[in-house]
Amino acid sequence: MLKTLLFLLILSIQSFISISQQAYRVYLTDKGNQQFDPYTFFDEKALLRREHEHLPIYDVTDLPVFKEYIDCISRLSDSISVCSRWFNFVKVYISSDKQYYQIKSLPFVLNIEESLPVKLLECSLNQTTDDNNLLTKQTQRMGSKYFKEKGFDGTGIRIAIFDGGFPEVNTHEAFAHIRNSGRLLKTWDFTKNKEFVYYSSSHGRQTFACVGGIYDSINIGLATGSEYLLALTEVGSEPFQEEEWWLAAAEWADQNGADIISSSLGYGHQRYFTSDMDGNTSLVVKAAEMAVRKGILVVNSAGNEADKKWKGIITPSDGDSVLAVGGIDPNTDYHIEFSSYGPTADKRLKPNVSAYGHVITAGKNGITSADGTSFSCPLVSGFAACAWQAKPELTVMELFHELEKSGHLYPYYDYAHGYGIPQAAYFTNQINENIETFEVIDSPAFYTVVIKPARFNNTDWLQDMNLLYYHYADAGGYLSSSEIIAVESVSPLVLQKANFKEGDIVRIHFRGHTKTINF
Image: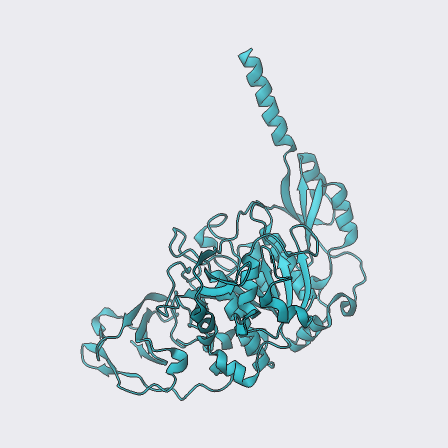
């Protein structure tokens, strides 16, 4: 009797395995014979973006996946979901080897790739107590007054926000100015293929607020005049296709004229090795890089992994052209403990810039405080919209590099802060003349840093922090170490020349001034 039960159990398990669905991406050889009119397919703003970026109006990657191919594959599958025009694939679910080989043998199928599972979004939310002073401080630290003086609020810039849901955005006071002026243009739930997105994770409401929300006449974010597209791309319990939904949302954002994608999402230890953070491996980083090639600035959270085993950045922040944003502690003005460290696996600088990782944002009712690089990212996205409004002639990659140069530490950088917190004064030409705040005394065996007792005319945007930053770099720019010193004496740093070899570089930064020592 026991043997019979075991036999039946084995049969039951085998039967379950044989009918369990597997997910695959079916890549196609071509786009078929189809008519395509970019002037009716794309929003006018998407066409203007292509013109601004000197991109062709018609490109094969813009064509939709050929409908006849989709129909044929659909007949052989249990179901299909995402169809990517950029990468020309169809996501399918099948439950037998027969289906697999039937699809693979189709003459227009180039390759079939398993769509491996990925779990939850990596950027966390930890609520603490409200702090009305911080609400003002989180935009002031980026020099908000300079944008305000010039009237730059992101007007004319269209921002797509990707997240796990946007509950209360259709009713909350923080977004009333956007709703009432008709600037919440389109929404789409890619997880359920429907327009309604005002449910699920509150994370999206909170990130959106940090881009362009206003509460009680105070800016939560800087892009209060921008237009918005909202894409729901995450479901907490969904084990498979967040990266494909991110890709689908990026293609949708492109079609609907987005200038900026703000994504407080990312993937790390649940699916990848740290060696995969090379800007080339994950589907989502390929999607992000393609979006940039279409002229869209992609801003993404660096991740919250510094206090975990993973430590480093998550994807798609590893993308070479993705503006990865790290987190700053408002109380110390340097790296917040959880914010992921760079560099990438292939030793490129990440994060690129930083902003506050502890913020005030939109709660279910009123405002609340929250922690995460999830919030430094949208703060920078709103900043970028104002910067692009200020300098509309910039191409997407010109803007990317100008945002780096606007960092309060630039040209100093490290793997915790990147180039630091972007400063509005850089884009409004209101940064005061560079004041030499220290000098480096050269002696036979040492370099000694000596702080000057100068008056710092630009302390209003640098704050009153006596922090000295320095790093050691090789000739290729890779950092072997970096340090931050709280300055408490006239000579806070002495460098022994014997510790360096030819080609080494040391950069020292103190209150807006940087010096470089070349060995």
